[in-house]
Image 1: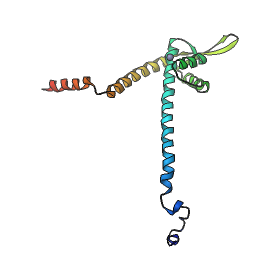
Image 2: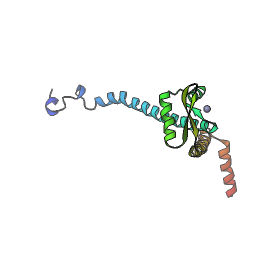
Image 3: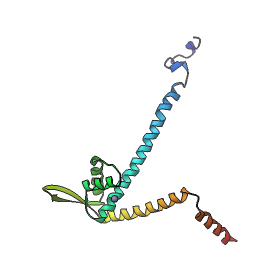
Image 4: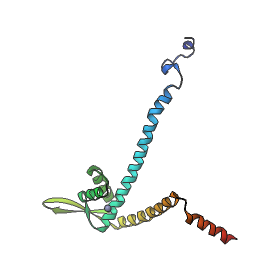
Length: 158
Ligand SMILES: [Zn+2]
């Protein structure tokens, strides 16, 4: 009607209302993005856990892919060989694991054992994880221990 002449170039606006597109798109688009981000973050964590888990077992003795997939299944983790093998190769390429091929029942099997660098990384990861777990569980509940030590600190100042 009258507004038609004033707003040239706005003919694409849905329902003739400015901004009416945004909430519609926002409502469907934004949450999906957040879910994706959360999934990606959890996936990164998960892959980090898997790497440490690999180093842990490799520190006990040589391991091979199929064995490790079964080990993960025992822990109720599901991982595809297409994810695990590149991960093992990456750990090897970065010097954390050393590969060794053995013929088992007529087939070449790739075993991975930990290197001194891998040992160091594992030791450091253990310390950091331990520290983090301690902090997370400490903040998880309001502790008597904390307020107790504060009380002690206050008492000491007197
Ligand atoms: Zn395990």
